[in-house]
Image: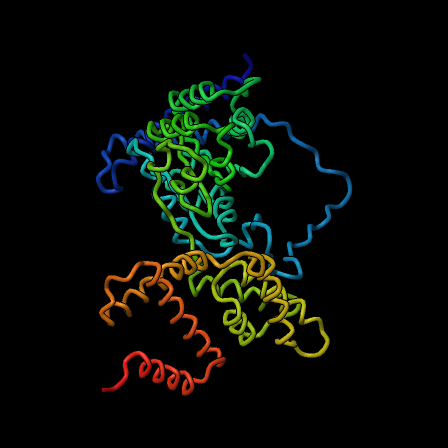
Length: 428
């Protein structure tokens, strides 16, 4: 065994010891931590740092290329600073969601007590769920939010990916992301044994960020109840933490998919809505520093047009950037028309019924009977059949509709009712 291997082995043991000490220290505050534990923690951190420095000193030195060094040009943002359609991957363009990130990371911090809090992020389409989950899993985000970022290993999984459409493929993909051996045909049993091994070695806790969870719950043939029950066992035992993203709550997805597993009841629900006012303003004001600079008045107008919904605000900002092409001033009417066309296309407003329409139609189906029964009761015809009540109510609704549309003259209708009343109830 050479020096490098000896140092690597010693460094691995030191890191494992440090993780144990940090876990013990997490149960105390800075004021209540025992003195001996604080000293051990500082000594072990110093030992790890020294071993890392020794290991780095053994790395081969790469000679610089001959000739003068060329200066690397500074990074500059793309001309159009607004993006819509796909998720935001570059953290420099990820705006807001500070409160949501704090809540998710606070749930993960409970792992120090042996109990992990799992989170289900639920929100409508194009609200930013995928961007949130992707950035949640990035080292820069974890390092800024967690007290012990090294105690967690985040894995972002896009369940739209073809590598995740069957159980063996998904489990193998996750094992690969965790840098664990992938068997030829991964099973739930081998997956659970691999995570249990991580726990026994006190390795970082796997945090599985599962985006587009609908695709998992809708494939019962590949992901039956037994699969989700086993995952629930993993979560309950603290062998893994789960963060999911979906348009509907997990229990609703399971009902639609014909699943009965109680996997969903270990989750904390986080409803993802629009950006805060400050976050939306921060997003709109990206245009202040681009090569076609916006004015503050234009930023406010963007907020008035698109509100605080991130996709709509990104779309409006991109259209404004395109409109400021150096020619005449911005044609806001044309911009708003283009904005509404794109919003209708993205959200399917012209192709899909409104969510309230089925409920409204269902309510209207029972309204004629209730209205007719009320009128008949007032007229002392309380023994009339239900079909009669429905016909009377329907007729009254039709008359009301014709009056509202201006088809019938109210005065002529009133005269007609008076003649009918006199015919059926003549004066003595």
